[in-house]
Length: 151
Image: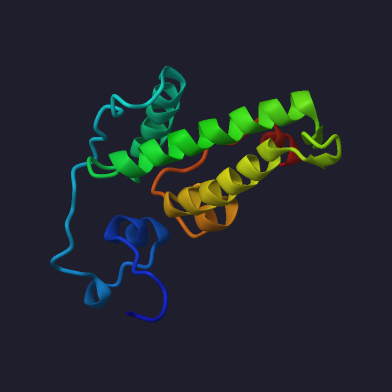
């Protein structure tokens, strides 16, 4: 068992600006930046989410042909989270147990577990504010109206 931080893939090191030649893995697998089509077991909503995420990640060079499983898990987990959240909103935080006592809505536990899983998956793809802040891209971000107004 190794101790310490997980090693970062070379493309992520390059985006972050920390790719020092002596610290790069010369035998690292470098898959093509082509994401496979979504797996057939995904629902139509999950497939749509898969495609949306794949397009955005491929555009910044962070998704490749071997990331299909992780993207599928991310799409499924997101749909589980949104479904549980919708049902929780409709039925409330507490529901009646068969014994007529109020108990925590089971959808809350499902939503919380999906949220934990989402956090881990989003971090792996650099899709959280803190993980994204460590990634630098060669592309400049376009100014928005607020930035132009503040100048």
